Length: 305
Image (cartoon, rainbow, N blue to C red; front, side, top):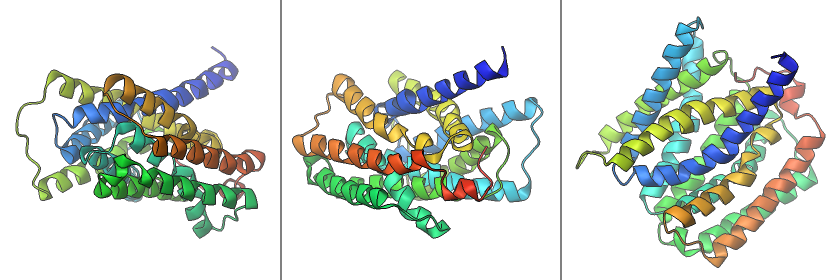
C-alpha cells in the first residue's frame, strides 16, 4: 500500500484509539479496582505492557535506549503514567464516578496552556478566555455530589490532569527513544514506581481477582496501554498539540455514556453543566492552536516518538 494512503489510515486509527479506547478505559478501571488494589493494578498494567512492547521493539531491531534516554523516559513516564493514570485510578477507587473522572481529565488542555508559559508560549486572549471558562467548569464540577462526596478523589483527579499536561509539554523538549520504544520505556519505569508505591502504602490482595478483574487488566494492558498510549505518543510527534489533546472533547462523553449504561452511574445537573462548560473551554483553547503553529514546533524542539 502506498505511503500516502497508509499514513492517513495510521492517523485515523490513532485518533480512534484516543477517542474511543481511552474513553472506555475509565469504566474498565472502575471494573478492575473491584478486584485489584489501585496502585498495584496500575503498576502491573504498565509493567506488563511496557515489557511486551519493549521485547517486541527489540525483536524488531530497535536499539536499546541510552542511559540519558532512560532517564528522560523515566521522568515523563512518572508524570504521565504514575501521577496521571495512577491519580485517576486512585480517584476512582475513592468513589469518583468514571465519567466524572474523565470529565476532570478533560481539563488537560487548560493546564497545557498554563504550563506552556514556562517554555515561553504566549497565550492569546481567546486562550485566556478558555482557561477562565475552564476554571469555572472545574468549580461547577466540584459543586456536584460526586466530587463533594470524595474531596480526596477530587484532588487526585485534578492533580492527575495537571501532571499529564506538564509531562506532555516537557516531553517535547527532551531526547527520548525513537518510536514506540519511548512508550515502552515510560511504561516500564512507571510500572516499577507504581508497584513501589503500592508496597509502601501497604496494598495487599485480599482475594484472587474475578474473571472481570482479569479481563479488565488484560484490556488495560493491550488496548489502554500499548495501543492507546502509543497512539498518543505518535500523535504528539505527527500532529499539532491541539489535535493530539483533542481527545478531551470526546472522552468525557464516551466515559459518561458507558458509565451510565454498564456501571449504573448517575451524573447530576452540576456535572452535566460542568461538562458543557469544560468542553466549550477546550474548544476555545483549540481554535488559536489550530490556526497557527505552536511556539515549540516553530523552535524545532525534539518531540516524542
